[in-house]
Amino acid sequence: MTKASAPQDHPIQTLPQSFRDESIALREAGIHSWETLRDLSDQELSRLVRLGRCSPRNLHRLRGMACLVCDLDLPAQDAALLMHAGIATRQALAGCTPERLVRQTGRLERNLGTGRQAVVDLRVAQRWIRLARQTTN
Image (cartoon, rainbow, N blue to C red; front, side, top):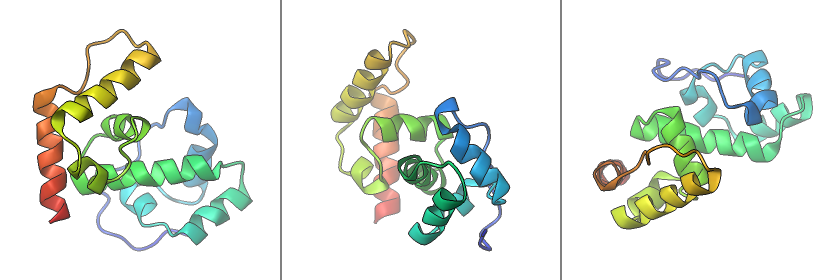
């Protein structure tokens, strides 16, 4: 099921518990890098759903995270934060303002009740947006 791809620069480490079934299915299918996951077609994702207990929604989320991880060289946890904050693509990130990005990610973190310091401040938001715009052009 895996495709020949670029070197595995971004190995998939441990996924959150909410992706337990998808993690098992990916491992069994020999998918060990974010690049390989990013390059899966819709048909290949559907096949994974049919073969296991994967959720189509979760697999699409993981593929979206893979795009952010690979295309912007973001850590998986930052890609997950962006995805869950409603910024699922490089183009969506490129279209954000730093203030909007800080507001959306901050709202998500407050709703989750983590109680930790916000990951995304204006400086980080500006860097991510600049990177997204450079890779979009």
